[in-house]
Image 1 (cartoon, rainbow, N blue to C red):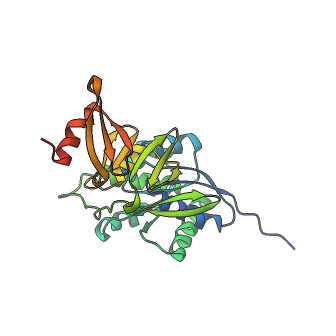
Image 2 (image 1 turned 90 degrees about the horizontal axis):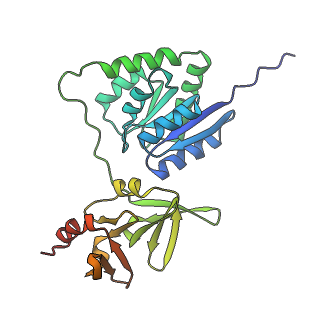
Length: 267
């Protein structure tokens, strides 16, 4: 009896600025055979570096991201772009373009079956060595001058929940409960009442995903919920700080002071 040849292991990179979205794809891939997660990225600029460095077989690529959009990532990487499955909130008009020139696309929120279908389609494209042809078609589409205004993505919602790992389990913290966030090396620390949760996320990425009407970055190492601020202090030497309602004091960057005063209604 002749045994069927073993499937080639597909190396995958996941690119999405939302930690929960990356985690969902990781969980779905963990159920699949002959798939290895080579790496991930949380913004477009890091995605380009990660794809060039790791040279994966397949990328799950978010369309809307800070730094570079998913489409700009494809343009930057060029013909070396591996098989790509877009994850997107674009409307149906834009999806027609992806349908013609991408391996596949997933409209958020997608279910398990639709994800499995996209993975099968991507694997087939890789095995048939169709990736180069599909990539060239996508690049040509991106370079065409659009007729009229470009399709607009659906309005992005700001973060409502942040997942944190706690003693081997993933816990979801409502953003509405977060008082302030501080940087701690490669981590950001969420301060929720008298508890602190560490997540591996950059402050810049968090700032871009939080509602600017609610949160304000007062310093490169601190983001504060505006309604938690009790007083603003002018310290000796020209330094500034805020005192929160729980008594916590945080430094305010001089470059951020004026805008913070405006946001607080201080004249």
